[in-house]
Image (spheres, rainbow, N blue to C red):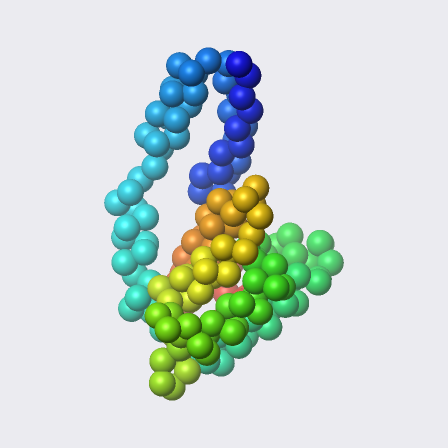
Length: 158
């Protein structure tokens, strides 16, 4: 038995090649050992209290559309946007009509709801890209949270 796995954690991809069940168990044990649940919970706990305005949401969507079509040399300095154009359309649609995660009365939305709109749109991904895009959605929304403090994701909300 020879199995090749591609594992993505915190944006780093690594190939795991195993020949036995014991090697697979060891690789899984190492992967789970690197996971810091407390760090992720802390990050996710910050999202519901962080609001963006409808104007900021529109800017994020507009910049996402620009990002999809800009030359690679311009894109390489920016954080990767995790969704395709059709998935962005789903996010915009659900921003208005989703029963659980739509905008508030004045058009603002918190980052927790935005994250859930992103992951809802990600359900349309092919199985081979679903997990990687899910990780990138979380990283992107975390970057938006940090953008309020002026980091590299600032381009999407400036």
